[in-house]
Image 1 (cartoon, rainbow, N blue to C red):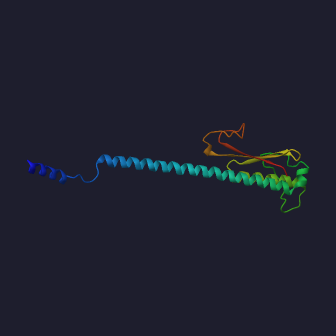
Image 2: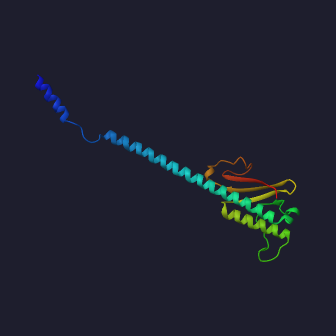
Image 3: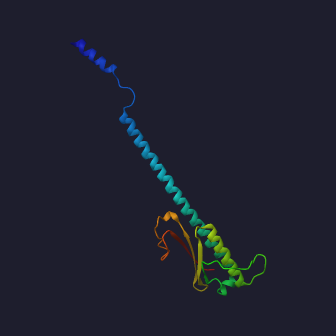
Length: 171
């Protein structure tokens, strides 16, 4: 009897299973698939955030641009030429090639600034409102697809997917 028991134990040890079962392979594929989907979602979110940060960086530089233009033409600011710059790009003289008055310089600055806004930001346009006594509000508006149909709380009354960047300025 003892011999028989020893032989059965040896048979069991000799019949070791080698390789993977189909279930183990399927579970491995499932785990790897979830990992790859997670990486794809991470990359997509990172690209969206990078695009948003890029547009905000441009908006910051553009608000600094018009603020510097206003500081360079303080006589035009004092005369009220920058009190109500609209989003419409005006026709202006070339103040680089010719001498301009302070009023002509403010129109030139307005045209150059909003031309750059429309070139650098999708649907970009800017306005400046205020006075020298109360300070100025510089507003940049652009279309941002990454908003997913939402509205920006800083931009009341604007359509969906429209982002605003507001800056208070006093020359």
